[in-house]
Length: 513
Image (cartoon, rainbow, N blue to C red; front, side, top):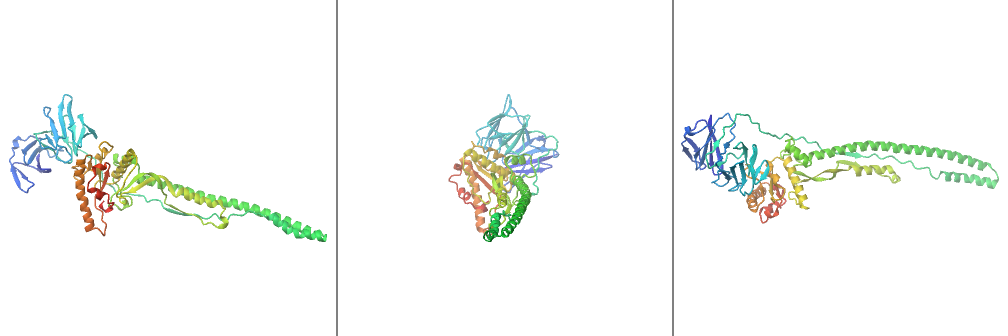
């Protein structure tokens, strides 16, 4: 058995664990220690006791072998206002919680949770609700705080710790059980190199010309003998000319047949050579296409990677040299991209300008130099400021797809997403991304009202000015990029109007990250 002491100083919770406790010695935020007397006999196993109201000190008597999950038993005769206000029954001390955020009350049907007009709303099992009759195993989220309801109890499972209470809660004794939490660890990325190959086409060889003009040449060769026979009356010259012409004609016919056979063989051999090349090039282009789709998958594959916690989740890291060329590279759609095949065409001779075989390498170059329906990407490091125009619904779908790509491929400790949006449009899903939280998970980088946007941007304005000063003072020569990267989604420009941060956001400076 042992004791846990929670001490609250403003928004800081100090948790300590001791074996024996009386009196209680607490270190205060101002550096002083203060001692409080505790009646150990008044403590009940598994219950909290309010030791002091200012500063607020709560002590619990627990079994050190149990998984202490901070579960309170709701009293049906009580109502429980929840909010940031100090007089709330359950005080959630974070900025994103409204003063009067929600009300938990008992009815004849059971426990009901109601939104009291809060800024950021309440969510049950991932859905935003105005009022809901709680069912067993409901998971409630209120601006970063997480609760679980079951059989008239509320279990606080948030990483923010234990809320403050303005009543003396009765804590349920936890069961002794082994709890397995989902875990995920990044693994080294294995990336296949893109295809690249040169194709230097062999020329098809000289085309065999047709034996044209042979009859004319034979007739001209026989003409002198014929004329001599006419003038002399001697038939022998004509006879010899005719025999010579016959022999020449037979020879020319043989040459024609041989030329035709050689030309046919030349065409067949070159087509066989081209067929083998085309088969290889077609396979390489298909491999390249599969590789591009694997590295930059579509939205359905991204969702599967996240839902199934595949090893590819958050695979791109700024500290991993394998990801240098595609870090913050985002799939925008499908189009034509270079295939990586460098096709060198054969040189043409003037005498072969009419050779049809020389046109086939040109056709190959046109067909296989580009890949159809391949992922088109944009790198945000190279283009820090991007505007997207078009029909509003298509723009929203495009940006949502971009954000999903960023969130799936990049770890949330390296890339943060900030969204200024209209609450009536489809942006709420981003609330569940770890990338939209600050490091302490005390508030989200999302705003849908002018006041929230003003407070959010004020913090970033100071941060970006500090980064700019560091760049100007120290890093002007080595161009060091600051981390984490911040992706600002300005979906509602009116929320950022007249903000000094817009000058930084539109500076197109990649070193501000």
